[in-house]
Image (tube, rainbow, N blue to C red; front, side, top):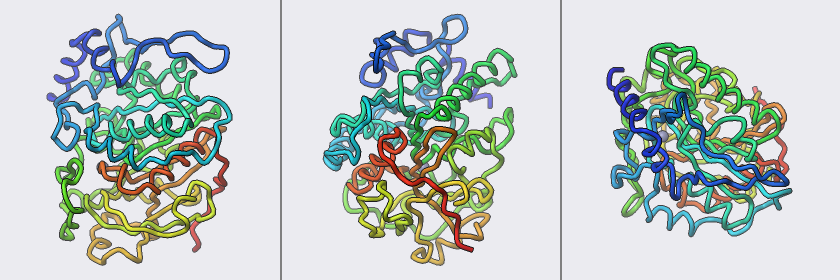
Length: 405
Ligand SMILES: [Zn+2]
């Protein structure tokens, strides 16, 4: 905790100029962004009390570097990865936008910071550019989540946000700081419930669970053992799956408690345990006729990633429409045996959609490793379609289909 607090103070003390520079350039442009329709009021990044920028964990460069440690720019994807991702992008979108669409990508994390965050953000940006389905702004500042800023967007894309990613750190329980957190949370939920969209990838579901606030262990701060095995893009042939092993801590993982029940419900589940990267899985197409799954043509396929499981009490097919899931029958007995606090239903959704109020939510649980963003063009088509569903442009049946007993 002492370490965490001191880095927080350092970041705040860095001052507005530093932060604005860090979020400027290709990442976030504080220049006025023209809204759709008649509204042309400019908006800029908000600041905190006294004009100081709000602390953001992404400004803490002691966190994991991007590109598996190959780069010192955690908010910029590796060129190699971007090139391969762009080459794999679909050229057309499945639906014509009903109106010009704008997406805000949020890459903030409060805990383990995935090196794939900037690549996922770039994927959204390039996908929109290539297909004309939307335009994109990228931010690594949780303070961008406020009612005024969000009024310029149609969807938020959560790029592996981890932990209590919207909250302002408040180790001393200052009510004014808590009010900042409360306002962000409200703006976020009001946004989606009013009819807008949320798309979340990978660690968006590793958010707001764990232990009570103040204990300093929100989310999986620091990441789970074995995370060190994650890296940048593979340089040669696909990695060899590891021997079937798990750590003691992982074996005891249970997911903890929901820390923001509204968010946990909205995102459809929270992390309990992951099979380490690179774990091979077979992806089953649960809803072959759903337009979001069109690219898969009903065919299951194999892939490799770090693979999440959800706490049994946080995820159920009663609440979400599952698009793809792990084909458990294809998993080795050894891997099956590693799962902590086993789900008796062996149901591990990999992507799904759901309603939240008047809004729509698309979640893709894969996306830990950079290769997920370029090794399978059908996966990118799936994500594109999922985002268009969240935007309200692609109609898809989102009625939950409960698991057959
Ligand atoms: Zn991960």
